[in-house]
Amino acid sequence: PEMPTRGTYAGRYPKGAIVHFTAGRQDQDGKSAIAYGRSLGYAYLVIDQNGKVFQAHSLDRHGWHAGESSWPALDGKVSDELVGIEVMSAGQLKNVGGKWLTYFGQEIPANQVRAGFQKYTPAQEDALINLLLWLKGNNPDVFDLDLVLGHEEVSPGRKIDPGQALSVSLPDFRKHLKQLYERG
Image 1 (cartoon, rainbow, N blue to C red):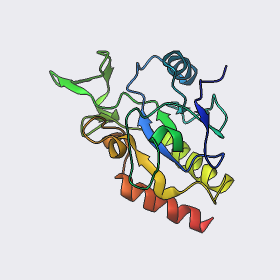
Image 2 (tube, rainbow, N blue to C red):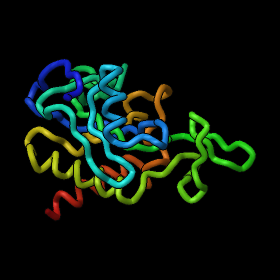
Image 3 (spheres, rainbow, N blue to C red):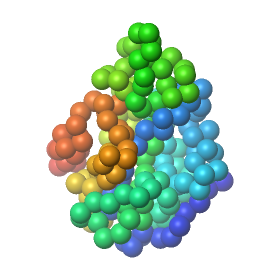
Image 4 (cartoon, one colour):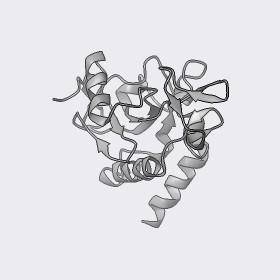
């Protein structure tokens, strides 16, 4: 079943994307993340731990995923203009007695942690890059790689994703995406 959407994008396609982490339980899979989002009225794409991409709504339709957020280059609310991409990661962790724990108390091995965040896996980062390049290539006149943003950028002080879950800063990530796209 599709996730609930709230309307059609002005250009019938997203102008860019917001990168999130699920901050969810580690025993979930991509289908569970979609089902959870659907139950809350959200609409987004999901990338699981193995880099598999899940889509549960049409790309010409927008849905709620970023809450109260804004960005200077956008006219409306972020969710109305940018597609949400949830990467399955616990996000920020707590160090308790030398163990890295998720919000739900599940332990994350130290080799999966960077600066207090569960790292996106190499497969997830590759899938994220490929998905974003595909979105750009699928509609280059509408999708703008400069509008690939982190939730932390559009909701400063309220959200911290992707934070250090992503291996590079968001400005460097955008620069990398543009270089890859220009190379074809």
